[in-house]
Length: 248
Image (cartoon, rainbow, N blue to C red; front, top):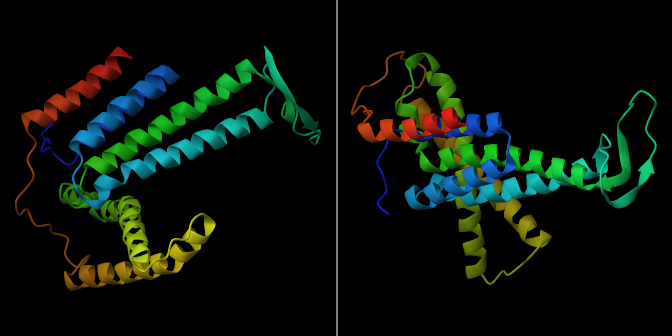
């Protein structure tokens, strides 16, 4: 499928509208369907760049969050009556925490409630992770208004951290394999920590030097060189998000 060339704000607006739809409908089935559609769009439209390779890590983080949220919902929470699946030992809590307990009967309703809430939370994370994977942070920075430009710089740097870490981890692991280092499990992460820290510090120093050499924050005027224009394709994508939000 041919990749569409869209405005940097298009996928962020579309993701925001889909996230509103997921929150309003509050349905795990719709949330899973939204994740499926979003994943299909990402894998067909993403660029061969560091930010384009970060979506798989977003899915892994979402899976961990779903597992932890489900576990906490089963072990800790307000008892929900229903069909009992199994019973856990109850740990007594102070009297100033009425209605909350650790352990007890795990019912189908309690498990399904924890899973539903976890799926919706993870769907929101995946949807915004897709927007970050589909949009170049440098092109996004170019279209931000001047009065939020400094805030935009901080946001762009923050959102580009994960893609850069993914690229750095892949590069370090490849270098370790070429040296014959085949450590697995926790030992592999211990070998990654120091090289990853050194590379992150070096990248931060390079960024600071580049911003200083370009006179960042000394001028309040921004160059209008090659402005990125909004096209009819951007309007079609945005209207599809509006339609989904209206229908939900």
